[in-house]
Image 1 (cartoon, rainbow, N blue to C red):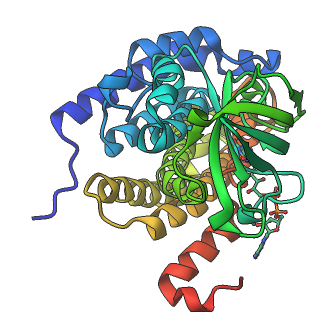
Image 2: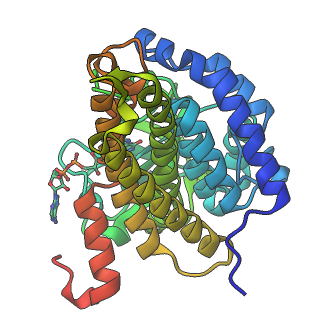
Length: 384
Ligand SMILES: Cc1cc2nc3c(=O)[nH]c(=O)nc-3n(C[C@H](O)[C@H](O)[C@H](O)COP(=O)(O)OP(=O)(O)OC[C@H]3O[C@@H](n4cnc5c(N)ncnc54)[C@H](O)[C@@H]3O)c2cc1C
């Protein structure tokens, strides 16, 4: 039997997150953007309902949710505050990596407080010289007795200016590509760490910026996983976060589409409501259909992960199409509001700025197509 329905518990969870997103998050979505401040107040409230430790097990302070439930959270929070959803997803990704690969000390000192919403942990892979080609990173980690020395620079890092720590990817064997990459937990108050903030187009409360590591010393126990395994741990985590990003973007687009339906029903032109013109109703119908398809593709990918089945292709397809379809829908919704949509009186222009960032972050459309092509056509035909 093929069953496309959510369980009663999942529907209850969806209602809880939707009510929370619409009554607590949405009213202040634009405020955090204008202030360029991380929404700590909202974050504390999100911790109370399990959003800061979604799939992290209860043993480490998390909510122990399945992956489909995490998708529901991403979609619903995305309807209220895209940037809160982004922080939820980053927590989910880092939580996966730390719980699967971190040692006891890392779990106690970082995973547990992160799951409770007390600490934020960034993920630092990208560098000024390399983004899509992540295996070409240049940051190094050299073992010296009972510690590692980290040296290098990371760029485009979400939460860089607000996080307490970062999972940093560095080369323990600079001669190798992916096999030379190891992950480390680096406290961002350690001597030798510096940060600088960016002025991005969107995600302005997320504190994106650069991290600089000038011979930063960290204990051996802060290595996350074995030497040379960091790249694979990150890629496995991306198979999860990429789907959540798609659902987060779709959530923001669905909410915008609903607001637009309300608007075109009441706004009059040429003696009729806008909704009566097919030039208005057709784009709404098209975006509704596309978003609904992408949404179910996302839940299928998460179901595959829950079932421990391969889902790399599905995750890459969701990450390519989710943000793209969402940005297109929000763009058309903005236009259907006329000048009103272009103002900051409505959240639409902010949603568009915020969603476009996720067409790049966590891998561009090209990167996703490289992954899909590699899986569908065969690894021997990949371009590198
Ligand atoms: C909103 C946002 C959040 C981010 N958050 C983080 C974070 O938390 N942590 C982190 O480590 N990084 C983060 N990043 C960085 C992000 O992962 C990189 O920007 C991304 O991987 C692309 O790398 P790049 O910017 O260096 O572009 P490049 O790799 O230089 O690519 C430039 C262009 O060339 C294309 N291109 C590259 N190679 C190929 C190819 N083989 N075939 C076809 N086209 C190709 C790309 O798709 C892109 O269009 C974030 C970025 C954004 C925008």
